[in-house]
Length: 441
Image 1 (tube, rainbow, N blue to C red):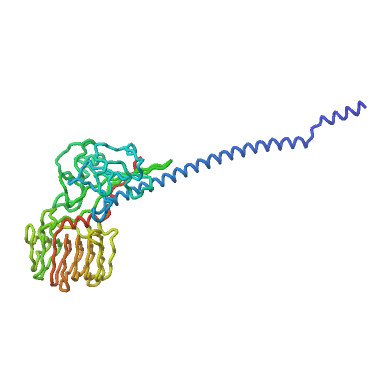
Image 2 (tube, one colour):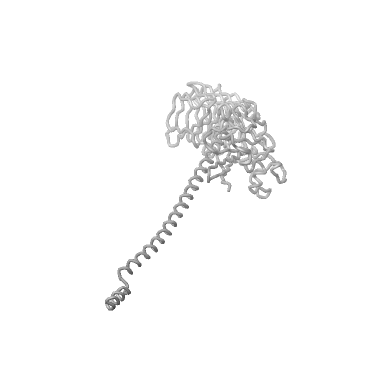
């Protein structure tokens, strides 16, 4: 009995291989589960981080495009005049005010603290239709559902100095004779874009102590949009391309030939806003033929001053209605809604014919054209080629300004009359051009 019992006890003391394998498997499974748990947690954390980054990036992109939309609305609200743009935002001062500031809001919850550059010494208008000097914080945007706000102001000498302007490194033509450094409290003069003097070849930024009727301020547009997790503020500077400098009611680089006895050319400003000009100014040849001339001086002039016709056309033609065929009995634009037409007659034998045309705004012509009466145009006409005016089929009446390489008439009645207001209206109908863009950090 004892021997049998001892034998059983010794058997019980021998390790069971199966139990050992099962134990190792359990430990391995536990270790593997721990590793997988760590890996899973790491993947989950990384995924959550990526999702968060993606969400922030998406909201940042959305805020960026919202800010761009606000900037676009600001430029649209500056375009045109009161008759063509009922929602126009404009400086109500007779002379442009360096402290003029206007806001566009999409929400009544806006606070001045949202604009880090807010200055209570500025006008800080919130323009409404029929009330450009409203100072109540009230939504006045086209896009009430979009979370952005916009600030519009004229560029001043202080703004230029913050960009690095100094007398020895000028950013603009400074005609005030002062080297004083300006401050936010004393911003200096408004900076315009255009022709500071009659002998300036190309448009540039310049200061003016008074109203520059043929030029317009450089506009600074700040647009800010914010969403949960994303906010963007951008600042752009935008210009209105000016009309070529006025040298006469009719400017021609080459020759002007007028043969009809019923022709009349007047350099007296019809709207009385600008100084009167000569009736005709040419570079290469004196004016020939017959016409009734008036202006200051009252006779056609010849001189060295030039207008770059091709440059002017290239600057203005963007977004214009493109014409490449003969046109008969058409009307382009309306008096309260001017438009821009670009006629490309290059490569057309004998040029193009525009017959029985009525138009308001800008007519830009590349190549040669013939105007067959009756023709009525109010605004600006610029041609890099020859314009032949045929008034035998009806009178040709142009009010505004004409710039051509060469002009000839066939016969009939032709009337050209300088009108600075018609030119200004045509120019204001063009979109503003962004010259500087930056995103604030």
